[in-house]
Amino acid sequence: MINKVLFLLSEGLRSLWRARLPALGSMLTITLTIMLFGGAYVLFGNFDRATRRLQSQYRIDVFFDPLLNNADAFVHYQKLKDIDGIASTEFISKERAAAIFEREFGEDVVSVLGTNPLPAGAIIHVARGYRTARRINRIADNIAAISNVTDVAYRGELVRILERYLRFAVYGGLVMGLLTLLGAIFLVSNTIRLSIYAKRETIETLSLLGASPAFIRLPFLVEGLLQGLLGSALAVGAILALIDVMNYVLEQFVLYRLIRPPQMALALIIFGVLLGIVGSARSIGKFINLRLLENR
Image (cartoon, rainbow, N blue to C red; front, side, top):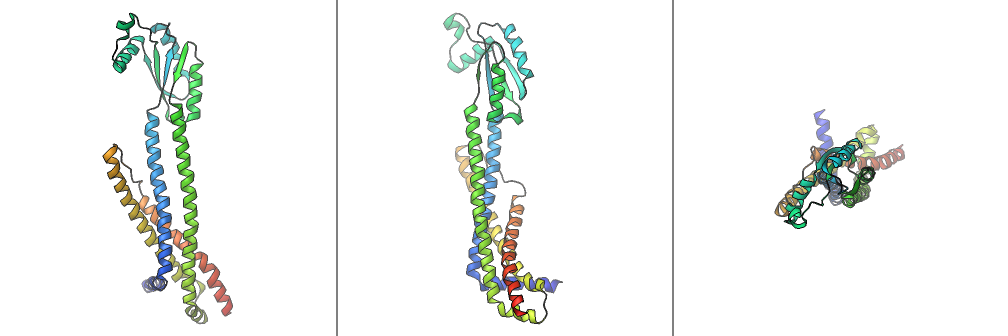
């Protein structure tokens, strides 16, 4: 068993060396493919994390009729708790509104105007599953329908912008990844095809000696596996290095670090190996079967 494994590995390595330039091209294409998929995955995960962090700060500010006193405004405030999608609410009395105004603008509204014209209000925190533009709009409409609510303020445009860029990043990454994936499969297939052509006499001899089709195919599958393994390992190293470089740059300007998704390296290497095997199997099925049929 060990001798067979060593034979397959040695044959795969020999084939890679014989067709080293095409093999290098296919490995680099696999590297580019894995980097695109892995980079898109890292960026998507971190963009989603940053988006959720921003969304957790979203709130809806509610203002009641300025003519209402605190007690009457609080009666209407209680109705907010019946609206779906609201995680928590906070009542803002007229006195607290004046204190917030003084903190923000440095002026005591009572001293300036002799009275407090600011309305009572409320701060609404949206539940996690409702932090999308459509759902926040629906919540805001339900709040506005409550009697004596004069204004509802929230960052609806910011939510829409975040959702739009998130969709653009996902779809753009998928298109680029699929294109490079097809290119990688084609180049791996082409490299294996050259190896099969270079070893056509050996294949014919093995076939005449009674070697099984599986025995003839396995070295080429190993060659594709090695291409995928080497290409994906190079891609994982490049991605991890880029994450470190980007974190160094980000730390100079913002207090944010990119995270490395758990099990990312293992998943990308497995993906690269499968990519190499699929590319080699594509050529093996076409050319070795044809060669064996010719010998019969």
